[in-house]
Image 1 (cartoon, rainbow over the protein chains, first blue to last red):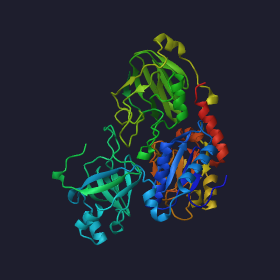
Image 2 (cartoon, rainbow over the protein chains, first blue to last red):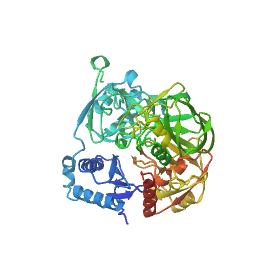
Image 3 (tube, one colour):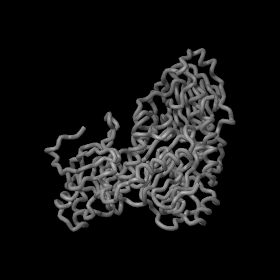
Image 4 (spheres, one colour):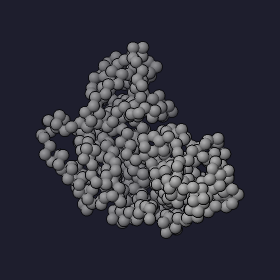
Length: 240
Length: 314
């Protein structure tokens, strides 16, 4: 077998999985393609495929060696990729026409600054903005959930305004409270569990992205869209 | 019911694993040595997805609350049941009120104790596997402790005590066991990011033995040996990780991702250990020496297909 060096490409990953790569960048359009393929495989599964894991720019496709021939899975994956993208519309309209995953919009109320977001002043100073301006900019975009990973329910979001990009802490904290909203480079995200972490924390939400006790343990899934809303602790009803 | 009198170093409840949730950041978990786990369950008549105990390094002391059929497979421990030495890889009848006592570990790292009917704990996301760092699954998301009581399920074959007794003594043949070794050679498939390393770096990685570091656990096995140098960037845009993926972080020391691994990662993956050889690695101890051998995709698929078929009922 030979594998094309240009994108999209499908690489074997171990003997029972393939990685479908759409590119090599953190990019909303690449990510939309990942979710389009993932959505298609969820709706119309390929025989033998047991799991797909969408990430920023690639889809990991695992199959059961006893249930499918690897070469047939590869051929069927190529067929699906070609079906979905060979007739793609011109670039300027792609964003609208390629389905953006689940199509769900989830609003997350956040208490910015103070005890909930100790790094807000540092982020503001680094970006040359007033803290209020950081909050205004952070609550503006519609974020795309590029992927979940790192820890259960942790969502990596795309579309952070460039003016808010701030490097990680030089020394990660040993414990970041669940619900903390942080910035790391050009990424923003919400801590799903209390874990160690090096993201700059600008606020916190009462919503739990992951709660094993809830009948739907995950608040968001890859492909969702998210908007942050500035809230005050006293006027917000605790999410459950 | 099994009463835990001593828990051992790290004993957890595991079933076949929590497959299908990686897209939410949830690792598969399940047994480190799938072959020994499946053999133990099969020997007592369970399906491959029943809960069993994964026993790491030192074994527990358990008290059997009723007559039961058990099997212990994997690492080679001295085990006494009601004072009588019990062999591994056999189904063994345990009279209610007997002690199951683990002694010296002669080889391997992890043993699996299965009970007819399975260990029954609340299921989370369709699995009873313990995920320690997520603090869920198994018994309250943690390893066993002294005083714990483990419920056992209904025997899938509905056998009475004398039938369990009659069914004891079945042996899991050596031809169906992995070829365990203190110095195993693990077959790997290069990729998906082998191109991040110069060809002499890849060759060095294949030529030299690596030693298991003490900083190894169910998430990943860290290796000490020749540093694998990146030829360019030391990071990638995070993508999906598999059990068996070999990541090379910037310091050049390989990490083999194991069952509790993070679902995505930003280090280049030089290769993947094939499924058939993961049990060999799972039974290695810190300080043990391993080697890697690159095989073709066709060889890897053939080897792992045979491996998976050996775990099927016959």
